Image (cartoon, rainbow over the protein chains, first blue to last red):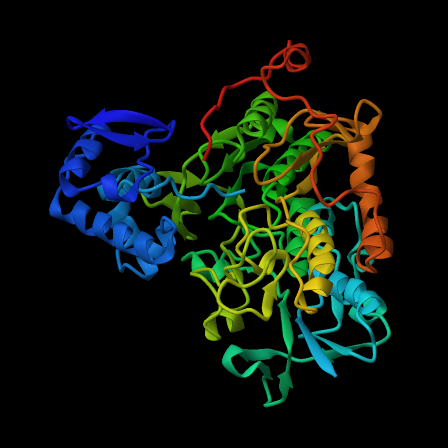
Length: 104
Length: 431
């Protein structure tokens, strides 16, 4: 684990840049994280990000794309438009959560 | 008399019944196992059946043949578990009370989850090989197929035996080559992962093998639907892959009763402690084999290693003692690569598949992560091992915990020598 400066403050991140401390995140930081991966954050993005944060708090795990659709009610297609190509990974990154558990 | 109830008489459930019947006192514990039918399928056979390696009757036997004396096998569909009342309801109204419950009802393919898969082209140009019927139908289709675009596709992870799709791809390539059809067949391997496999060293090796065989790899493909009129596979980000023959690995889900009972996650897998398989929500429910949510391969080898740990722990647990063993996520699998050769992988939660020898350092006899004829024979021999040693719960000379001896870490001197020739494309990203 290392410390990186994001948006002018120091946060803990893993080797791929995912935040490792739940409480170091806020919505200001999300804007910078999103910009890092070429996304301009809108309210539509934030709705999904807020669901991820709330769900993680409840379950202790980053929700899968399936869970975002089933439980959060976000159509998968919309998530692919908002977070192109790798929505699960990108949403987790912007939400300051661990990368979704790799499948084996 | 205390009651142990096992749901599912497949690979994991049958092993649990055999191992625990030997270990639990008959005057103290009654054991009941439930399944919906009396047919045990050798599921690894589904992969080879389409290529004529096995005939259908070689891969099915009655479940009763593997259930020991002193275990009551009940045939019936499970309606639901009522965990608050320690009982299971069967369809038709029968009630089975329990003191300890073991959920071992595995996972099944759900082709209906993807629009267009079970449509007019189902079992014609759209196939799967994860069921007995599907594997047979695909075998029939391959016999007469004259070539075109073959697309092999994984819908969503996790799936049972995650390497089966790439094995099928290698076997098909070899099959068409032998039949003189290879120049008439374009093969595309489509995966939701960002490489040929999940773990970096293995993903690189398998990616190189696809490349060497002229097989196109399409990554990060999350399928939205199949257009069975245009015969195309369409992703959420609107990529379109045309096919003449589609072999898809559907979404896999745990048993529906798990969901109905409020015991499952979004895919009906029971959330469990990944080292002991104890359900996180209930102190007298375990989920073993593919039925739980442990983050390792859903595969018979995982079931085998995990049931070894589970059985040792269970006898202590029911006496109120701490569980002495901890499962490390150990899995291994032979990967058929065509032309009578196979690779072997051995890994766990923390160590990705590495090159080396197995099970003994240097002596092997099997080679890890390298294509060898002997690995292929290992795979064929395994059918005998499965029926005669594994299901009856007899000891196999393989420890439940993974061993690092005989393995070579990337970057070490040995690894550099072994890979001097270097495999093809790079894919360092992990999923």
